[in-house]
Length: 228
Image (cartoon, rainbow, N blue to C red; front, side):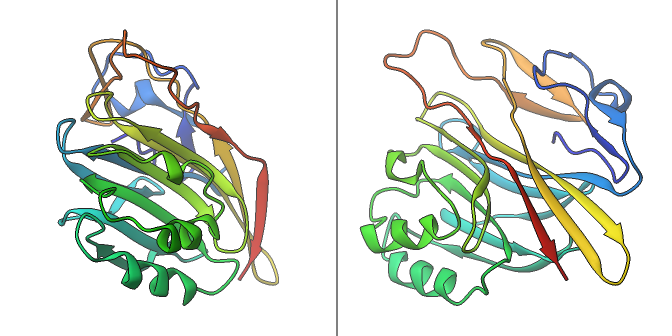
């Protein structure tokens, strides 16, 4: 997956490199900088949801629906849960998100199918993490969010079925001091229109051209600072 280790970040916004070499995908940054993100694919586009930070895939969803991951200030996984919103998981999803403390980094991604019984109540809960695109999630579509509970969506992406992966990647600064200061910034991925992209030894299926209608653009947020 497009995941660079601590001290490195994705090299460019327009990811057009054909490579399985990490050096081709990542560039050296400050020692305290890392990428954090979500990759989501519906049933027809890869059927997976993967969460990563600081060069490590720290959670892979194994079930259908929406996976929710909370992240500690050091970039490690705090908690994770998956809710089958194709069936009857919306109430549990809403309750889970409402239980998360404000200021917590929250990552959300869809796998297989997550829209069929995703209720307005569940969507409202997701929006408390800054989501603005969740209303557009369609049958077997992909959805990825890097957000903050009670704060903004720092990165968000959505795709319809057969359009490929939804990828949301944020930028994390970890600064030592009297505590840890975590600064989250948006990074947008512009995926080319055909073929496959290989970075960090993992393939991404690029979105297909010629689809009807206009696709939503990945959300560009600002920055957000958290104190541990």
